[in-house]
Image (cartoon, rainbow, N blue to C red; front, side, top):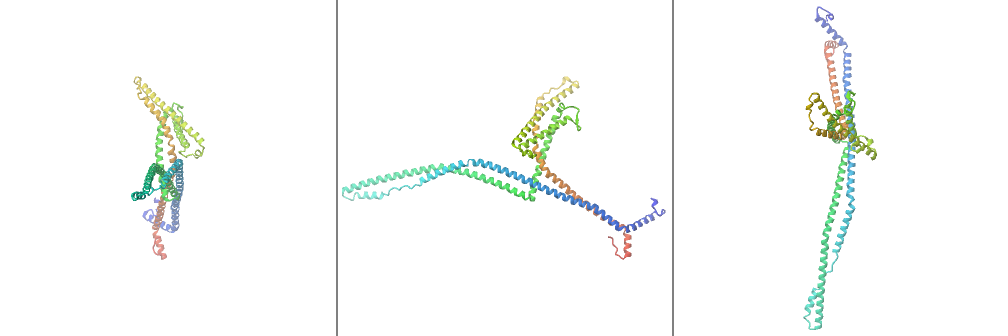
Length: 466
């Protein structure tokens, strides 16, 4: 260090000389150094600014792409629901309207009968002859004449008038009674007509309700097709909920697959060559893992052939006969694998009993080998578990498709969130770097303040630091 001292006997003077020389040198190099600081600021802070712009643009592109995918999936879902509703309404209307001709025929018959009875009741009935005054006049006239012939004639006329009046009154009563009887018989017919009318009203109300459901679906379709922010939020919420539910079900399925794997891994070691390893795993473990994977694959093809899932469009576009072949093949494969697992579960219990007996024998306690009292129950339980687990594992194909469909949106949201945070972080770093280089420029000007002020004094400029 002393070799740098210009005056070794006076270190302080040497440091002052070096400082003064550096001030003068940096004063003359002020503009290049400022340009260098500015270039460094633009190279670093500007780079982070461009990174922030790129991440922001990328986030917007992914958000727009995810929005389009959500809208398309939402529109497709609503279209499927509308088609299902139309199919349901078509089936219901076919069933409802199948009896409509018979119902209409019954209604027409009853209405015709009512009309006939009404017309019959509406016939004008002749009034009883108004002979009462004539009869009374003849009765009074009988005693007012002395001519026996005239009196006898008036008497006969009186008797005939009285008899005709009684006959007319009797006929009037009979006709009235007949009309009342017809009117009484109309009551049950009218009730049947009323019942048929209620049935028709019920069917019409059902049709109106179905049309309202169609209107509701169409309103949702128009709302989603419009692509508003509310529709996007609603679709995003549904997809996120679907993702969470499917993830939980898949996690439960993974636990079941783990149990299934451990149930058959031990007996598989008796069926495959021992000591062979594949990628660091025992060949028995690999075989058990292959069986579990095959069960999942067969479950996927089973539900694809049934039309429950639509993972493979080629299967959905096949003819009904080909899909039946795949369906029966998947069912037979699952039945075969479940039977194999049940057999392996029985073998596993036998191996466990043999191992326990061997351990007791090696310990010199051959006389104390335990009797497996509950061995049959254990074997039945493991065999049942080995037979049922493949079918349960096959059902995971449904939430697996749900997970695949929903994961695109969820991963897009996560990626958008990450790069948005990266954008903000890049902006923050750029701001800090710009501030740092500005401070560095000011510190540099402070260091060369003395020669700058001397220069400004000789030039007659005001004292200032840029």
